[in-house]
Amino acid sequence: MSKARVLVADDNQAMLEIVASTLAPDFDIVAAVHNGQEALDAAAQLDPDVIVLDISMPVLDGIKAASRLREGNADAKIVFLTANRDAQTCQVASETGALGYVTKMRLRPDLVRATKLALVGRRFVSPDVE
Image (cartoon, rainbow, N blue to C red; front, side, top):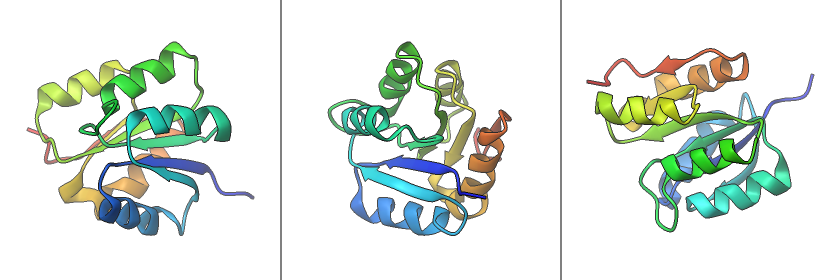
């Protein structure tokens, strides 16, 4: 069986590399981009199954990118990966239709699980969200 296709967006190159290496054993990383606009462009071309989005990015932040993906009827599931542990931000992220909210402090224990759950339509929020 082929691996699910994942697009990753984060403005920090080191973080992109960590995310890709964390996900690569279980998923096919189709692209790693540096902002929300690049994520929109790559999603249109590559049709990923899941998009992992940072919230704080230049050009177009993750929340706006997720909203535009939904407006464009993109089928990809969305998982946010963010340093923000605030429950209110988590709620705003959820309102975009995202199924996952993973904090960067819990990247290694939570991201693969959140991505797998998103693929089957289930929600996941890191337990350290306050």
